Image 1: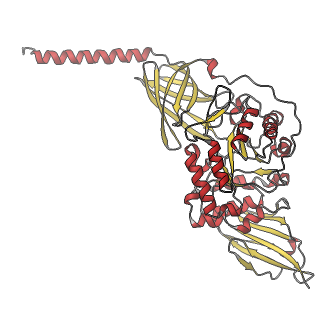
Image 2 (image 1 turned 180 degrees about the vertical axis):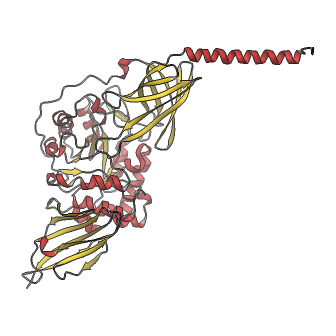
Image 3 (image 1 turned 120 degrees about the horizontal axis):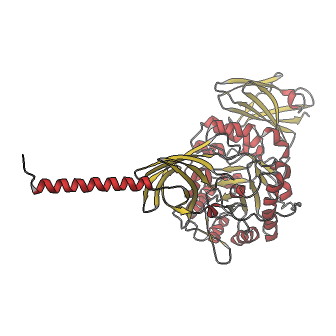
Length: 525
């Protein structure tokens, strides 16, 4: 029998110790019960933290539970816990009316010393944070505040034509900062967009910091001096906008205006803000999504803005809750979102845009249906689709709020956003509603009356193949070609005159494309 050397003995001893450690660790993990409430804190990189609560229920290696704070009842999650490794996932629903079911959010990490070290992907970035045990009480929203009695807020006299400008969210989301806004203001002027009417430079979510000892809202480190930034934007001949929510938190989890409406409005006015986008998000866990309750929430800020004495355009972002187009003017709303968030793809833009036709009559000077911001130039659609986007929004008299990187846009993008003739349709002072006059398969003909005895005619091809679309000249009711008036027609994308001859006009329209005409009548001498 071979003797056991000290070397062999040491190896065996080490192996046994390691095996014992693995067994004891496995037993420890097996005895760990993760059931309960947890708070995940992730640094936003700007001096603030994103806080997410979730509830876990453990049975063996299986985890179930819910992600809290995204709705009244939380969002179900499922996952697993084994050997200190945790994984769980949930599907975050899309905003109301967004046209897609939502997106999966997965959390992976380790459990060490009573804490989770978790990571997840957000907008193609790896986000890391630490989750510690919490309580049920901590997951609850603040107590419900009483809503005011409903009354009509006076018209603020602003936005007599649809607002035009730029918003940071579609392109920059949480990366927006002071430098980006200044660079954008410079580009809006240099590109000629300001002369074309794009005057509002709007900062969306993620500018907010904590409240000070007196409850005043402050900015985070991305925006060191909001007043100085507003002064810079104003020095360019432009106006500046900002974002908040009637809830305790904004969509991105930053500080909302809940219970601080008057205080925040005064702060915005002191900074020199000209436009407020007010997003329902965080209020949905506290209030019912009915016309009455939603109107009350927006009335509070409408009153607060009026009390400042500063002219501030009021943008209601509540996704069409309670048929907002019917009561938006009564809270001094200048524009109101009618839909969930637009996506930079044909299906989203097409669905949202054509869904506006049924409510087009509610648009009027100072009060506009808002089918969300423009995606033109962000890369998810073809040039034909972007021309359809611009044409349809203009026919709808929708706000034209660019959402691209205007400091680095192509000549093609410029040609779409800066088409003065198309913009003129959107800005027509008569504010007559667009009319759907013909639909055949995927072909749609829209007509909108304009000032000076003219009409805009849009021939839209929603299908996947080129088609011919026709209309009769006399259907425009502008006068007979050979009678007392003569018709003149211009193709607004080709920038050329169209021959008015015969009884009708026919155009070949590309897939997902548009032919947009302006037709006017002049009296014969």
